[in-house]
Length: 148
Image (cartoon, rainbow, N blue to C red; front, top):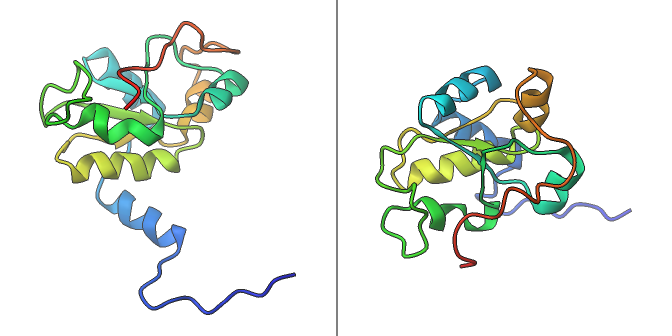
């Protein structure tokens, strides 16, 4: 077993990063997210294709994998989605269990999307709440936007 090297000055743990991100966003339950989505918000699934195929997906959600999320929702980006109409866009980020989505929602908040948030418990909590979902591949839910 390899021993850990001393932590470099200023290094933070992932738990520190997650706590900081969550202190800057107002997270929502799956039911609250579904209500905001129904009212015109954008439910954005950032899970990779393999994970969506394994776990299932939410019909009608926007699929934007994590590695291009900021480009798709920055209103000044040439690679933005049509939905990225301004800084007041209501983006509800969904991942598998609600960890990566917190970091992603905070990144969106950092570029000015003040309403960006994530779904507590992620897709697993969405399913547990009895909200609409489909098991298996998300072939009907293509990736949104260019491959930037």
